[in-house]
Length: 410
Ligand SMILES: C[S@@+](CC[C@H](N)C(=O)[O-])C[C@H]1O[C@@H](n2cnc3c(N)ncnc32)[C@H](O)[C@@H]1O
Image (cartoon, rainbow, N blue to C red; front, side, top):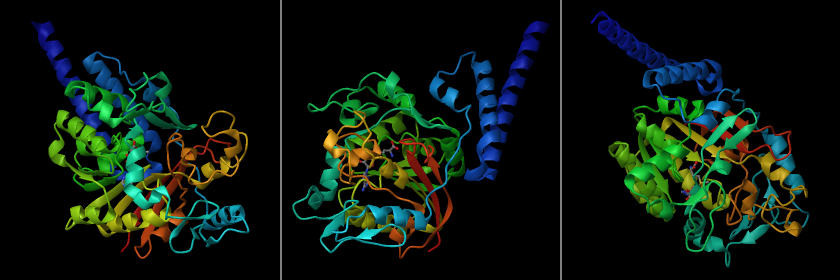
């Protein structure tokens, strides 16, 4: 009997311990800002996981992130306006009609867009139907677990089973066609999403500071990070050009019991998005890898619309492709790693959208650095909390992503 009572007391203490770590973790997350969230948070997270493992008697199965999250999380400096402007200007040929400014934005005559070097007519291009073109590509979305470590980003896509083909197209590694995912049962779809959801301090930190906030996630894909914001207590409006992407999120949200904290908007035009957002205001806009996939000239009205629905003081958190990544692609030594034939490996334009790593079918990808982003947002005014690159810009082909955290001033 005494032994039973002793074991029961031990069990209670273990639970209390776990709760206290959880409270400390939450308090720490609330206190800290994104630039210094690293070491303590990671060590707390490790301790929390160990306690959870002890309690359940089960080892964590998240081996990829567990391995990588023990590495320092390091961000690299973003380009200054002067650097970005010079690099971009030097690449524009003398016969180009584009006029480049002091932050690296190059402007073309009305009716045309900048492709990194030249001005191209909208008329006769796939961009006459902006959202149709985006929809054609983006039914195939990132579906692998990604982890930020000191060496840039790591994915588990190599270890994953190949995803199913869709209408004769084979998905790129680590990608899946959302219409195929929808063929899974509810239980399978939830387990599938659990296998790809981001599991890192960056996502956890933001999940904790977004509790109770209204977030709009533009270009949700499969919401590998952003659905976690809803799971942890934010209300998230998911907006994407592809309805089947949104349907996957909805089914996972339902399975997790958080559907009432989610809303969904299929974006088919900026006008229609404006109608759907009428009267709605948000504390946070998230755009993780989405708002650089069409010419800046076309995306700008959508950026401005979203800015008009962000409350003053609200946060804009975005993942984009940095200038240096595009510059790396201008070198002719990409080997067979990338999809275009050899003669396309010099002079990689924004319209060779594969340079961003999203596969050969990607119609467009454009670099953003802070000055370009801020000027593109005018007349909306933002200040930058922080900006950081993932992957060392000095290492060829290592400079993968850029993160921005902006605050709306007015
Ligand atoms: C590279 S995926 C990123 C998906 C997701 N955010 C993630 O991190 O896994 C890009 C997503 O953005 C969406 N997208 C691209 N351009 C968009 C736009 N202008 N408006 C809304 N969604 C867009 C695509 O449909 C696609 O789901």
